[in-house]
View 1 (cartoon, helix red, strand yellow):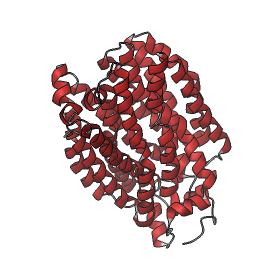
View 2 (spheres, rainbow, N blue to C red):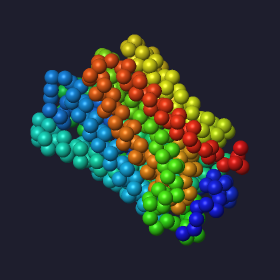
View 3 (spheres, one colour):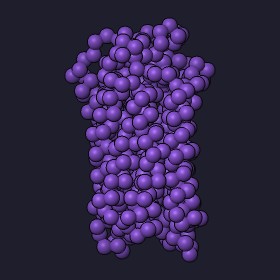
View 4 (cartoon, rainbow, N blue to C red):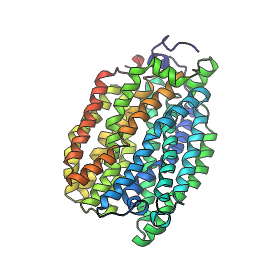
Length: 441
């Protein structure tokens, strides 16, 4: 194993040889498809937690928000398991290749999601029902913890340095596409009569994951290994214990990655999951909220690429800062627009939150985080920063937001929470360096 300090990460990447663009396009298409299929599975839980799990899997109480709160507690448990997946699959990805790790993550995710669709409800099995749901959610969390870093690196490690921001942002298209796909399927099954939807219709999106699993495994098994990892492996530059090496060499980078994640991940699940709960609480039809989420996420798919492209021109930090500061500015107007109950204004709120604020951060994040770490520990370093922060940001944000709504019956405490998350990420950006390779500036 050679030292990572011989060249700065960005400069070493910029010195890479010319890129086979035909092979790169194949990697991009296959990676986006594989990511979308995996994140479809993961995002199903957040939609179901907001709409059905509280009623079906947890004891009924006098306050309907309490069941939803319990369902989001299961949501948080899945996030708590993500660092475990990040450590395990980060190790596998840095030692044996990104491709091998990603086949395993999709296999675990597909099996767990399919089994959720077969679970008995609380009325049928009592406490076994939420217990089994939580076990399967933990498995989903482990798989997703190893997924993001590998999915990003398959593209970014094969892209030219001067266009890495744009190409790496394609990896997030898979994440956004997975959410749109899961929301769309739930939108369709929710059109069933309520009794049928609650008895069997909600299971359909989960059971469909068995087909997705087969397609995803085929796609991933045909992918070539990333260029940077192949070069490092050929040169004997693989770390024996990559997680420990990442902590030893890049402690500040891991902390910065965690800070970058807070506003992006926490804000995302307020806009995507908690907004459904809040809409239901104030009497907005579920179809209006789901349609708004789907529209905003569809627009965000294109905006992610724009923000990634812009980061190749302006730098990673300025573009990410747009999203973090935007989150602070939009926090109160977001809920004010929802409170109008006017569909057009509801959709405007979601468009401000997702394509603008979240899009600027998520579109820039893959290149920014990847450039913080050296190749031989990059999967592990990214996974540690990305997944540890996800426990406190994405995992807890809808749970805390729902608890605040249950206590105060108002959105202003949640808006303050959004502002606090944005401020944390702004501080992380101020403490970070610009990672855009010098040769492209």
